[in-house]
Amino acid sequence: EAGVVQSPRYKIIEKKQPVAFWCNPISGHNTLYWYRQNLGQGPELLIRYENEEAVDDSQLPKDRFSAERLKGVDSTLKIQPAELGDSAVYLCASSLGLSRGTDTQYFGPGTRLTVL
Amino acid sequence: AQSVTQLDSQVPVFEEAPVELRCNYSSSVSVYLFWYVQYPNQGLQLLLKYLSGSTLVKGINGFEAEFNKSQTSFHLRKPSVHISDTAEYFCAVSPGTNAGKSTFGDGTTLTVKP
Image 1 (cartoon, helix red, strand yellow):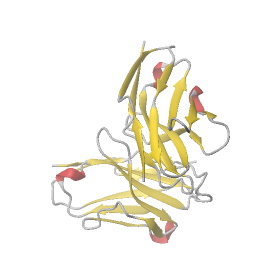
Image 2 (tube, each protein chain N blue to C red):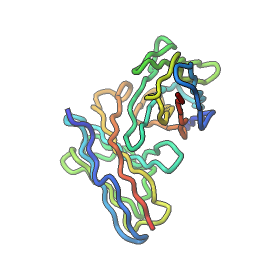
Image 3 (cartoon, rainbow over the protein chains, first blue to last red):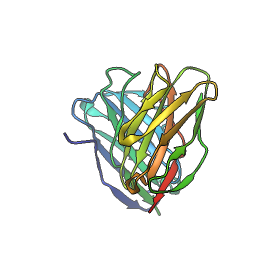
């Protein structure tokens, strides 16, 4: 069974440019997460979807970040415009979503963003 | 609110030696606790998790962790490490009602030397 797929794996852009990341979760997983991992730190949750509904986006900087999960399957995270401080690894994870108490998250390999 | 402190940023150890990676947490509610491993250029992989019941939790690759409520700790141990265990290890805590709301520590780099 394929794991969580993310693309691109690496992206280098100039500041003020837009950028988008794509995630395809494990088939049948209803819950999808986007995390940001800064260098030398653990992941920080940006947004969590239950099917197509964003149920937790309290940490998403809404002035420049947006996300969507149309049809409750794959998802796109966008930054517009990018700033130098957005350089990080963006991780996508998915889980079955059957029970919040025992749900195991499966992580993709991440997209490493460098903003110059 | 909850927080996680991983007490060692780097742990060097020789092959076949035992290792302990330390994790303390803070929370005003009951918690679930997790340890993840991240190999270079890969995503995180769940090693083990504590939800309830026995305080000693066994995970994959020979790792185990012990939940200590009085000391608010969840240290990860392995009796004999291999070169292949070299990786970044993350401790995470979530409220007991929502495993999807995890807070991660900053990670411990385990380096196993021959």
